[in-house]
Image (tube, rainbow, N blue to C red):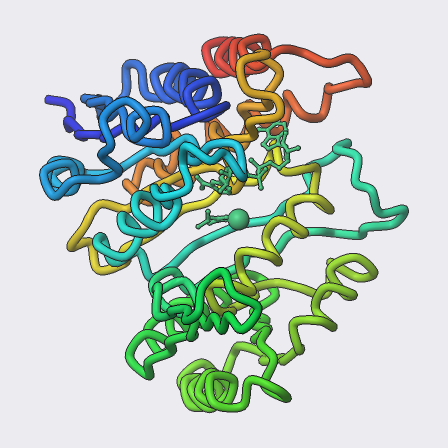
Length: 352
Ligand SMILES: NC(=O)C1=CN([C@@H]2O[C@H](COP(=O)(O)OP(=O)(O)OC[C@H]3O[C@@H](n4cnc5c(N)ncnc54)[C@H](O)[C@@H]3O)[C@@H](O)[C@H]2O)C=CC1
Ligand SMILES: CC(C)CC(=O)C(=O)O
Ligand SMILES: [Mg+2]
């Protein structure tokens, strides 16, 4: 009897539903006739839902989504600056609430420059690294406030929260990931020269955990220098571990050097397995191209591969990755639609 996996699907806003539709077709093709069947439930959450009902993520929504084995998300958020969304804060109230409530403390973002994929770098070398971004702490926790709002004397702060517990568990995960990779190298990225309290904690914990992983070479870069090396020498990276904000920024840059934001996948992982992990492209809802059928669904499709890895379905994950690698290798100058790319990847999977 086949294993039934219950999947919550949150297509979201903008290009989210467009890319998720293709990702689900690919999931179906990759798992057809296999040991696992996916039972999907769609949740209409996001900016569009907020505008229609005033709700972002209710306690009932959260309880329902939490019941599933995994979550696939497209992207949420409206056009930046849309006054109708001013009070909503969809990103914090929905996306970050899910990540925090489901304890997604590892935000896993691989960057691989697949063969024949153009990079803006003249000589990128062998780009194959993974960013392990902390997902539940840092400046994204909402520990801030403002006084005298709107006046010339306004003061606003947004405090980064870093706990020994939170840093240690993500650092330990990153070391284990580095140890399992051929190059066994871990780079801590922070800003210890200025952010001395948070940076000091990260550095100390990396040094402590390093003693348990003598096979892993440890490196450190300030985040500003890391942006230089991501462009001039990305091949120097293997596993990067960093905080929530730095990881957010570095992974858009990492996407840009390794084929573009349309190829960048991610997993919000709860390694303990107490809560469902959530898989999503690195990109947002891209309101500038939404509704035109031109978004690249590959990032969402590769997020399905990460989900299949996480669910211990490595053969299905490989089927997806092999089809994507073959598809991207043959992309020329011409532009295909979202559904043409999705269908081509499905056809490759079914042909094998
Ligand atoms: N995980 C999520 O749900 C995220 C949501 N957002 C939200 O998305 C909205 C738009 O944010 P932006 O800063 O514009 O970032 P974005 O990632 O949505 O778009 C940045 C640029 O990349 C392009 N792009 C993104 N995905 C693409 C794809 N699959 N194929 C081709 N081009 C693609 C867009 O057209 C745009 O020019 C905002 O409301 C933001 O808060 C942003 C990042 C992540
Ligand atoms: C909207 C943000 C909270 C999400 C984001 O940009 C990301 O996780 O990459
Ligand atoms: Mg981001």
